[in-house]
Image (cartoon, rainbow, N blue to C red; front, side):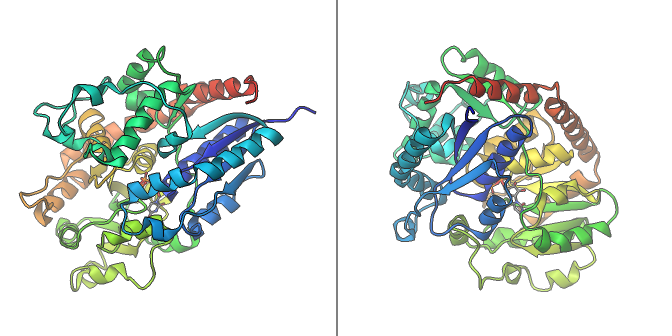
Length: 447
Ligand code: UDP
């Protein structure tokens, strides 16, 4: 009997990278007959949340952990660098796994994410890098990239903010390699990123096919039991009344900013559900290494008396909430988000308007897309010290939850939700792109 086509997916470290790829794999298997192997580079031992996700996978999806990169090597290094170093260190064992898959299966494709490009080969130059000689943030005019609204250099993704670093060089190599791949799978859909997709398609002759297969979002919480308290609390709140506040799986605020946010939430008098994380930037690193370190109680950093004063108004939960379910709950009416891409898509799929509070990575670009292009978000302004103060926070929260501008933003998000559902429906653009991709792989000769 002929073997099923086999697809290898190389995932970069972090739950935010695993979750969408797992959902992508499940979606692919729903209608198509493949075998899939996740190849997972690791830092230290895999986290409990990660193991739970992998254990729950159907039998057609295998996973292989690559040998862990030692924690000492990554000590004191920023999360982005940790990821790239881990990916680089994992290349030799990756080669072994791929060689074995080629020998034993009908391997037809290797899928990599943004940090996985070192697994591909080198290609042509990125024009922006050649035409600009200073740091992008020092450019007087906004950068005009094809298909994007003009973006100020300082709002481009963090890793390219310092052109002398290894991280910058890694991203530049990654951008060049995009030209060599057979196809680019993008977790988006036409109504969300139409201009960008068209610009990429115009480039298609020079690069591979663009498959817009999204939005792919997580279908269930990995920590149902721990999250059930917040869902029960939401059950008792009025419809659309609660602002969900969450900065993704690792984002943290400074102590001063966390205090302003707490006081701003209180001042707004709006209901809130806040996933609180300790205001210590070291923990961002630690969170990427596995579960957050124990012994830190994030709630201890809240202003004195805050929990008692707001006990009727809101709920604070330490570190993690079942975000997908919270956003889908009828009591949730707004989302104060760091604009991570998964969070952005999850909010769109539930039609929930956003308060955009980008922190790192490419989140400022996502925030610009959400506020300026899609008009599905409001964005608070920082003061001269770089802090968003409590009055500004309260003003924007009220604007979103009960103000006229909030209604407009909400309508834009509802329309996007409808467009997303249409894209995913059987004859929709994303379903069709996924079918095209599957058919491409089915007919592909093996490596
Ligand atoms: N998430 C969650 N509960 C939390 C924090 C995050 O379920 O308390 C999930 C969220 O639903 C999303 C992912 O973790 O699927 C975060 O990904 P995103 O791209 O938004 O941000 P990142 O964590 O990569 O910064």
